[in-house]
Image (cartoon, rainbow, N blue to C red; front, side, top):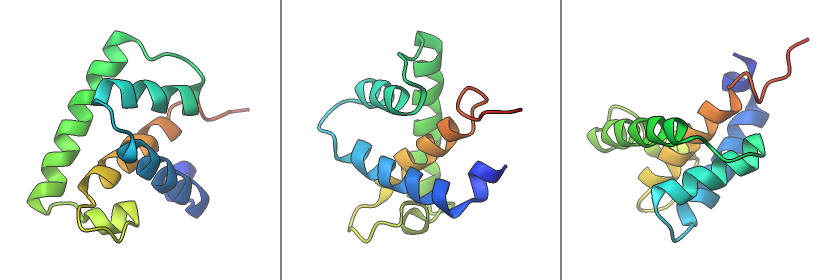
Length: 103
């Protein structure tokens, strides 16, 4: 849970989310980029599909106002939904056992 609540991880997820949202690419390519940056490997097809479903659900929550996009992304832009969605995706990756070292 520390990676969910620590300001360093929050700001890292926001920065990575902004970079991913700015890529002129499709979601699958952005998911591969996210996986390479966080896990240093290609995502499996199942992982890509799960992340695509996660992104669709988060975009819907952001568009409906259930989640506050500017609070999540830290973005001051007119359209903060994409940076916020990718910030949430980065936070998911940061909380995988594969990313977190446990001893």
